[in-house]
Length: 314
Image (cartoon, rainbow, N blue to C red; front, side):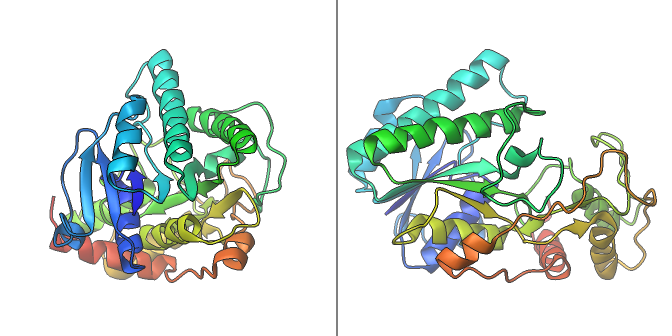
């Protein structure tokens, strides 16, 4: 039985499906949301169990681990950025991490797989990004600061207690159930589905054609998390979860245009002043230690996502 904190979130729900496909049962924690997608509904009450859990309460986490005889934890809960004040954000994230680690230790789980992020490389000047890179102390974003701190603190906890902790450095993930309009690819798909021109207002910056990210389809991400959570033995403590290759903005746009041939968009040529060379996440270790191989390139991922959106209009 695998406990997935943040189990009713975008990545959590797909991770649940990936674990079910490998013969596991799952407990999904929820806070506010209680919506379950079609690909899990038939398993609710059988191999999928949903529990209301306040991760800032140590008793809640320990209780759910004991009642369900949890054997491993995929700790994927992250409060939405900007939803909490600075002090409350620090309290919730720190208390949640401590409570998950303590619950794992007390319940004797095999492993705690904790969601870190590609953001830990945010102050590294260029890629490719591999897990052994030294990470600068300074941080340019909330996510970068918290994830580097959590890896340091949870790694120290693991050293002291012997709890098996692995950090999931999750990249830029896209696909079904991602609902926010805060990314270029969601804007392009919305434009294609509504036969309008893509709009960039509200994005951090207008996209440039040659700027790139390591973008990964959510099903590949979920399989990676499942494999790392269930692996008998791992050779290192942190693993990149990504596509392993950079995808340029114009490639993402062309993948959407392949589905919507009349797609309209403007995109500045060349690199932006903030563009960084070779932003790929090196996934050699993930492949070596779990046997993982990506199944989706950008064209296949975008096409499947659009098909899902057409079948599930919001």
